[in-house]
Image (cartoon, rainbow, N blue to C red):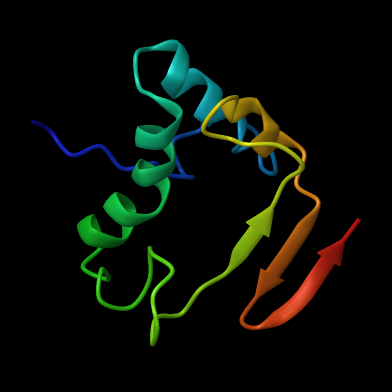
Length: 94
């Protein structure tokens, strides 16, 4: 199959509204899990960074978010991020 990567420079969504694209991906046939992989593992791989970022594994750089529900059930919950950690520092905690 074709590897699809989520990108933030296509002009589909306004700055800060990138999570809307997850919903569009699911509306057009991807599962929530596949859409999330497109934004993480696949994007890192296509950028040649798969050994550095894109997955939560020991030794890899990671910025993480948390939401109140399971995005594998409803990908729209990614629009309401409650927690952000970037470079090991908590940036947001609601």
